[in-house]
Image 1 (cartoon, helix red, strand yellow):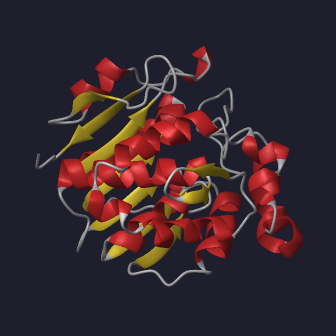
Image 2 (cartoon, helix red, strand yellow):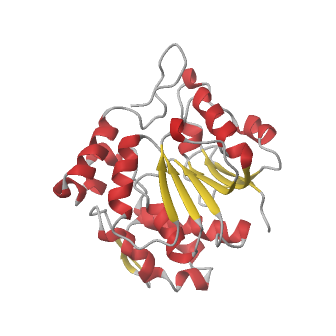
Image 3 (tube, rainbow, N blue to C red):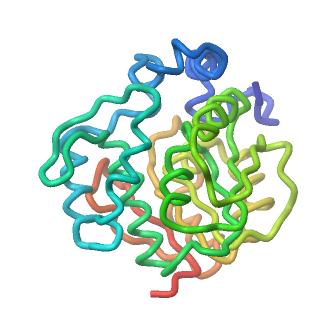
Length: 262
């Protein structure tokens, strides 16, 4: 398991808590665990805890984009694996609220950047690959680099191998990343849940070299992480702006976006 370089040996993220990585390893190796990992209590502490009510709010937003809404049955295939908690929603039927959140991010990508076609994308903190699959179900990125702890990447590969994807997919840990120019970097909460020492690595290797970016910002790390605050990130990332998180899921949450076309 990766550790940061600080003397206190702070873990690399809030998800690097030993229990969550072990669930990821077990699910990646055992089909019985994989078939139910999205309901595992130790997994849902980190992911898959979007509420039914939040799902309704996401649905209201994405329903305003008829082209994306028309692909709902394709997006719902995300829920064929892992046995997520699903709810009945008007006009679309059963779906995981987490999947609705991923589709809402897709709506934002279309809103801010117009398209993800022909882009080289890097996602920091990838869960089980659900966001990657949603983007690939609608757009055709050239490459998609998934960055996370090795146990999470193993589960992500097992999940994504069930789908035909448009992108050439790569899986990398923090230390395997090269300094590279990306067209778009994404991070849903994960980047802002890292210690500053690890954030600096991602800033140097990925974020400051990316033409466009979309980060869902939150402020939940312990004091010893010394994570970057919103005003600091806006000053560090050229051209970045803060936008409201809709719906607001936690106090101080917002979106950090740069390179927007609209």
